[in-house]
Image 1 (tube, one colour):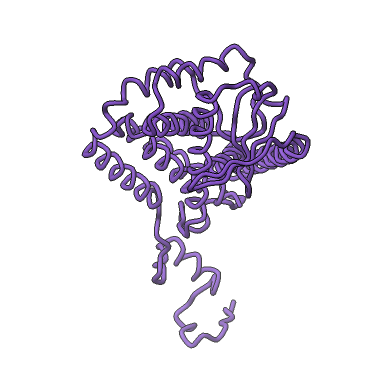
Image 2 (cartoon, helix red, strand yellow):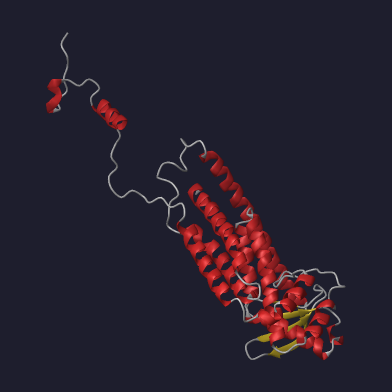
Length: 320
């Protein structure tokens, strides 16, 4: 068990640390690709610890004669307890989301070409958000009946993109990884960055569909005066000022940075492959050659009083 914990800890730190070095290579205008790459890194965090590799030769980790084995076992127990508590919290959030959806008021359904949204109103949310595992559900705060047509159009286009991107399932995957790697701050930074890239990808999709930037900004600002209490969902929130500055500055740069994107993805793949094999020490396949000390100890244990007459293997008793 301690080998597995050490394996997972080192690999996760290598993967996230080197991924952070690759991240600046990716163009900010390609939010959708940056989001996918982050999601691939989170999926890799689940798979990397289970790769059939070793970090040390047999007998060096997990045995009582190793001075560091006790501390490794202690950290393993602490990791397991922390992950268990985080998973229990995640399960409690899922139950809370189920109760929220059950108590929400049904406002109808809306069909798009590529997805189907059920609209519900709940006082537990203060801004629109998409949730639901099998059925995409748009939760809106009370008073949504007073929204005008342009505001509804901006909201539906944005939340539809979240549903098309399968952000609900992606967020639950990220929360699962965060529960397993609760001790690693890089996981939380990557999770926050995923929320930012997800929102940026939806903003870009709304503007590509012909929505006026001014109209869209007014819709975003209309929810800033409310307190931001997130339901146990889903899309998360980024800093609004950075969101607006980002999609305005990169609106005309959507087609640029292709080669930079290719280089960034290639570097990310190299990082993932390097992290998966880094630190591997192959298991010896041939018969180990004993050292001189081991050979002498073996002979001494077989016959502690050798003599020239013992070549036949029969015990020799000396005469006085």
